[in-house]
Amino acid sequence: MEAPEATPAQAEGAEPAPWAHLEAPARLLLQTLQAGPDGARRGLGVLRALSGRGGEPFGWDRVFEALCREEPVVEGPDCRLELKPLLLRLPPLCQRNLMSLLMAVWPSLPESSLHPVLQIVQQDPSPDPDPWLRALGEFLRRDLGVGISTEGVSPLSKRCQRQLRGLCRQLGQGGRKLKLPQAPDPEGTEQEEDKDSQRPGKRRKEAEEEPASPEGERAPKRLRWLEKEEEESHEENRPEHESLESLANGGGASSIKNQPVLGAKPSEAGQSLEDAKGLPESLELPRAIQEQVPRLQQLLKTLGKGLEGLEGTPPVELQLLHECSPGQVDLVCAQLQLPQLSDTGLLQLCTWLLALSPDLSLSNATVLTRSLFLGRILSLTSSASRLLTTALTSFCTKYTYAVCRALLGPVLQAPGIGPAQTELLCCLTKDEALEPDMQALMLGQILELPWKEETFLVLQSLLERQVEMPSEKFSVLMEKLCKEGPAATTSMAYAKLMLTVVTKYRANISEPQRLGLAAVLELNTTFLKKSLQAALRQLAP
Image (cartoon, rainbow, N blue to C red; front, side, top):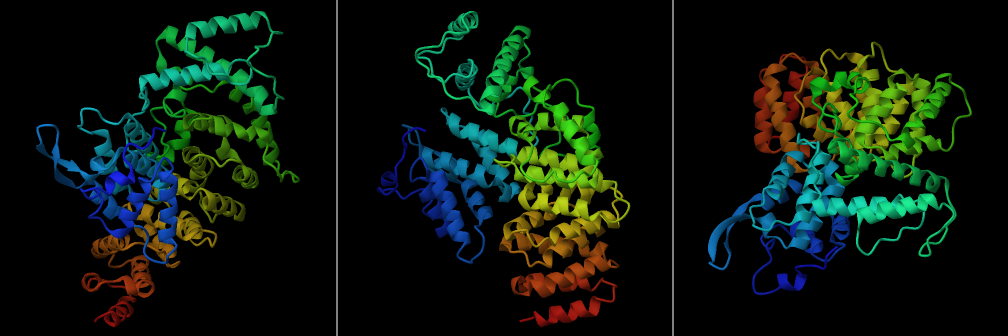
């Protein structure tokens, strides 16, 4: 990382800092982000400290609104007056650290407020926009799944892509200790590799032999294959099939057009498993990964027999999930036919997946959630088994965001869901292992959906837990509750939901909100109407 381009000392000069007019928590956060190269890490500590004081959660909505607000500033040698958002008036170091922090906490951010911030980064009109900031913004847009096409597009500069390819070539040279060349020369590198292949017994003087681990033995073979794939791709002028190019394109982002990972439309949720089975040959598994698929298939057959004694450390074959892009994970899931696993096998596989170290990426966990659970849950005609319920709740405890995006939303919006699906989702929201921030994450997901009868039941089950939420989110809840009232005059599920809100969150309800609920309640025809009216009268000032 470059040296700080704007230090705190500069912010303390004659001109006030750009964030001087913000609220105290936001000022503290931005000052911390400007503290140095580790500002993002320090900013995360500030967020944790603020949330640990027992007050309201950090008001990201207000911060994002302030970052997007345009104000007149003097620009250029001709001192012309321009409108510029606060985000682009922050020091470059603060901008970069802010984007890095957002990448770390984005599952808990309000997406509707975050999108305008990313749009400002993408459309920076300055003559020399910060490429680092733009790349970070592009990575975050991809994580959010905002509908942008990632096929053949890299957030990295051409120079960075060339350097990354050269680095991968060096890593692929026979498992020796990495030694970067003085000047990257692809032709010279290839000639030297040819010499090494003719003299397998000769070692370079600059490198020392190190003991080989099982991972170290497999990696050189895999990377040599990646390099070969890249050379063939250049000859065919088809960069979208380059495995090495996919590395340069941001960590192996999927190039499958019909892959619904994070941005899946609800109407496509029920067809996602069929889509995975019918994947075109536009994405192929690397040979080193493909070789492990048959062993995993045999392992899953053993799980399907319900044999005992399979607990313990997860099989090493499952580590391949760390080496796959989301599209490749989708392909592996299709080949393994995960939806056909028995509930016993599903629980054991989930136990192994939860024991993997390091944790799965959010994108890969989302793909696995969809493959393991979505079709299985949508096809339920009776209550879910205890094995399925245990597998789902345990997986949700660790990968709540993945379950929200790949399961909670699609199931609630799928046509024709019945009591079996609703009962399972209610069980999910009641899980005692869910942390408060994960409950808030589920609530945010439900608030973004169109509501129907099943949504009332699941939301009421979640709100029984007295979810901690900022005032902005509670306002959204109250608005939707009032909006749905005229269409749910005979719904007992809606009446129970309203009763839960009035009794559990009475301290949060303002007088205008109380009057809004009272007006909606006049149309209600359920036997809970009088109880609700009495509860609302107790809230009157």
